[in-house]
Amino acid sequence: MSDGKTTSEIYIGLGGGGAADGPRQSLVLKRANRHGLIAGATGTGKTVTLQGLAEGFSAVGVPVFVADVKGDLAGMAMAGSPTAKVHEPFSKRAAEIGDTTWTYRDNPVIFWDLFGEQGHPIRTTISEMGPLLLARLMGLNEVQEGVLAIAFRVADEQNLLLLDLGDLQAMLVWCAENADELTTKYGNVSKATVGTIQRQLLTLESQGGDHFFGEPALDIHDMIRTDESGRGYVNILAADKLMASPKLYATFLLWLLSEMFETLPEIGDPDKPKLVFFFDEAHLLFDDAPPALTEKIEQVVRLIRSKGVGVYFVTQNPIDIPEDVAGQLGNRVQHALRAFTPRDQKAVKAAADTFRPNPEIDVAREITELKVGEALVSLLMPDGAPSPVERTLIKPPCSRAGPLEAKERAIIRSISPVEGKYDTAVDRESAEELLAAKAEQAQAAAIEAKAQVEADKQAAIAAKEEAKRKAAEERERLRLEKAAAREAAKPSFTDRMVQSAARSAATSLGRQVAGKFGGQLMRGILGSLFK
Image 1 (tube, rainbow, N blue to C red):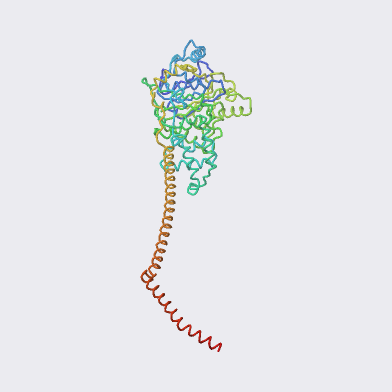
Image 2: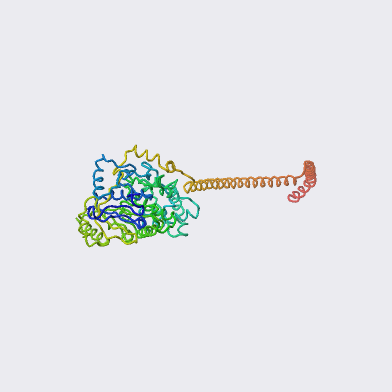
């Protein structure tokens, strides 16, 4: 019980400007999944209102998720103390609104932290995040987002798991190396565009994005828990360090909402929400958001109520919330606004116009006169209609309003129901390893092919040399055959001797004949001349 009366509602505070006879303001649990808005200038009491609402939900068995931007919501794990100076106004306010059930008490808490320092790490995979949210996270333009979507599609087609930033970086390298082939199949993919995405990915990594992507991935059901006494766990995300990267903060919370929407079953309008999600610094979600992303946010907010999830945006200025989203926020708590600038005046008028009129309240005037801890409140009634706006003194929280000491946080974390489940990262085989293996195989194949080419070249050279050798041998053989033939054609020694003897005999005979008849002939000739 949050107020000792009924679990069908959560007591918010007392109307009538704090007068004890003012109308009681309570949030109807059956209408709590119709979302809400907590708005107001800095220092007007938004965080205290958020803390009180979170306590109320927890007390009636509804788990809560809240981002601790300033570090002071961690105190919800501990009961408030009457001796703490910061709590003195709370006890006085409880007495002023006549809340006799108010007492100091703690809440069951699970601490989470993207960086794993002040709570259990929260991780998701690149594939679960998807190209749309990643493009938002990296600030990509439409062309770059298209190339990123192609990388995701190719990874799906090749059964490559994209788990962490290393996987996505490896996939982008592969896309750059195969840009021509991808362009032919999917449309223009330039190496320059891929290079731009890679640089943005490095920027994201330097901002701490590498802590967010990996395994084990968050199981949403670990946030939807109750303790042994039936109180809902308050899931507190340490966001003080995360706020240094506003885009990472906003995109992470949007992913968490989207994951709840995709994971949880349809349950319609339950008697009380399955989970309530407080989105602090909500303006960061919509700053510079492209139309496609704004449309997705509007769709998630509109449909997630049927999953039993209530979303409460917390922001300084109500005009930070787009109209399509603001129109779905049925429960409204508006703290003081200042009308110093034209934009402030516009915000005052916008806030005034969103409330159901109350003839006794001039909203535009009173919204600038509210004291710390006061708010203009309009909540959905059991029939779903908004209640007339009422100036209300907000019920104070029962838990500590301030940070925890490191020792206290460590103790709470050590008894967490998910202790040990997410604290150690797991790096299983995924796109980075598979692509590296393929690259190694391709490199080995290339080396082998090169070696084969070289071997073939050497074999060709050897074959050529062998052919030359055989040709030389053949020429030598023919030469020898010719020489042998010539030798064979020459007369033998006996023949030469016979021929020589014959020639000698012929020569001798010739000389004899010539001598006998030659002299006679010569003498005959000479004699006739000198006769």
